Length: 568
Ligand code: GTP
Ligand code: MG
Image (cartoon, protein in one colour):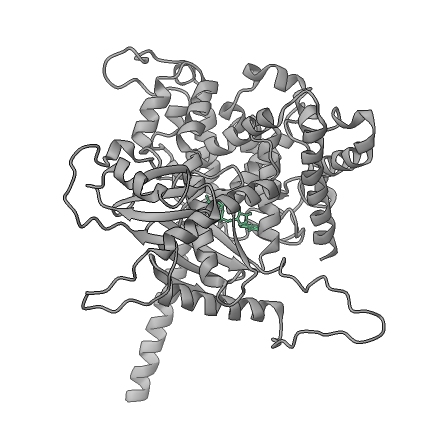
């Protein structure tokens, strides 16, 4: 807990001061900072949440006339932004300039009736547009006006990458094709805001915040929506009781542990989402997991949602990943590339299991970038020092040059981006050797407040095939779930990819560029996304299973014999 508090303080210092410094810097306008995406996660959350509160989600008919639709809504106030997308029908996200417009709009919304089914009268900002008049065929909503909410298929991506002229461009193209769009990000915050409306029935001051890849900068279109029910900021927590005299305290029910409280809160909210939540289907309460959660599908957005509570470490990990992603654009690009490669080969999956998670993979990439010469990102220790320097120097002239971003911008690697080998480096033999060593060595990213902060591998503290130290809870292994056969497969695929990139015919463009006819020949990164030759490697697990099944067979035989003996 102490360690967490320290890191907490550190993160707030570093993120908070970054904003202070950004403001202090005279040479850059706020606008250019925004363009460069240099916002703290906290600021991003605040802005997006506020936007979401002023927004509504409307199911439209495909025959809806866009102009009429906007004219109708504008009666309630100025519209800041709107967009359409498809998910089991056409939907519109409409953001008003003022909160009052939403109130005014909702005053005129009808509760559905006239059907043989009865409606649960829970009112939300998820609405349906009805058009009882004539259908206007001009300016109808069509697919082309809809903003895509899913990624392009892998085959199309391979074609797109094959047309690029360099590996650097392939990486940028992949990142561009897969990253969350502005609209998708807005939709994620809007879904959190809609969920919050349900949770506020019990906890009026709560917020629901997205975390994980929805906000850490590494999210791919179509990734799940991790949400945190935040009760930490409700008033009364910081009220200090006077040393003498009268004071009041809330009477509250108590449970055996914080975990038990989390479970009971999630159980009730999960029940509400299930019974009253419009568009929420397939609600599962997974309360006995290490991190209790409620899982469901939000149909109108198409998001698979995981709602957790009291999950501060996950939010801190999100902040840390976000911070690293902001330090250097190459961080996000490489993470996207490696995540996409891993997904294409089934190294990762959306189903929980013995495979490497995207989180583990991201931490591996960060570790890799810390170990470059010169390093591309700082160790956590170094980051902490820089944050400290920034804070101390707030009143002094040194402040700007001490900012992490400036530190890395001055590294020779940043000045010569083409010298960076991109994924070729990520899959090079060092990484392979490194992965091979995993069964003997500790694969500890230099992120935790322990020895490994210096970016050094250590002896593995436990008998897990892969050990990646949790950045905030040093004793925990984030890749504890990974079994030996999955690790074998991962290593074999790394080896194969490294080999492929070393071949001159794979690592150079093969013509059939933008102007060429027919499908371009895959090269570079595109080759790495093609089906692997090592997919069929015999896993250790399979080899081990044989004797186990023999043993079970023997056991069954002996049980049979015993039964026969009893009968006779
Ligand atoms: P995708 O959902 O696969 O796109 O990536 P994600 O980063 O969102 O991963 P996931 O949904 O599995 O987890 C959500 C967030 O929870 C992660 O980004 C981390 O911040 C955190 N998290 C996940 N697994 C672990 C873990 O084992 N340890 C810690 N400390 N945090 C984790
Ligand atoms: Mg996620």
